[in-house]
Length: 199
Image (cartoon, rainbow, N blue to C red; front, top):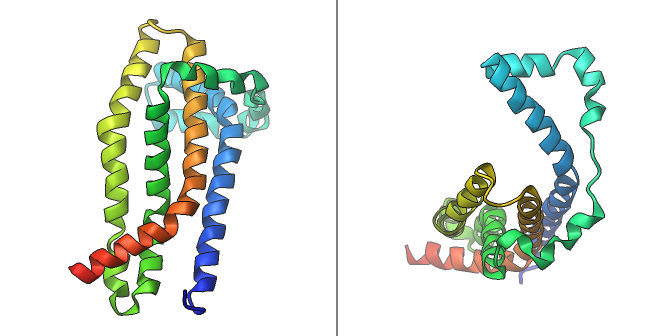
């Protein structure tokens, strides 16, 4: 590896590490966000106006009482990985791979440009190669099953506890995907650079 691009690779790893940290932090606030959005949906049914709900929520008095929506995740939710809310390990693995590819796509194309300086403009426009694979996995294989799961909850075919287990498992898969992106950065960049050379 050229000494000139080694710091760039290190910077990308730091950014991807920050993405994993942000995912973990976001997971911590999921219960709070769920409560806030449930309240917002209830208000939307009453007001029939999304701008009206936003204005209602941004009122200073309501912002001061926003702490009522704060909720700390329960450790019991970590036991979900036994049942996984009905999701298979294969499904969660696919989700992990899709998240990893989505996370690394742009960085891989930029790093490919560093590997092939003469083709850096071409490389920087090829992030869709990696992201496209993630999109196909997500929208053809994952989203339909998640939609069916949500529909089953709405129709009370499965319980809320099962759905929470599925959501917690998906959050775990997303965090694992953010970590896997660190490993996929260089291989994805090499593939992108190869495609740039071919075309």
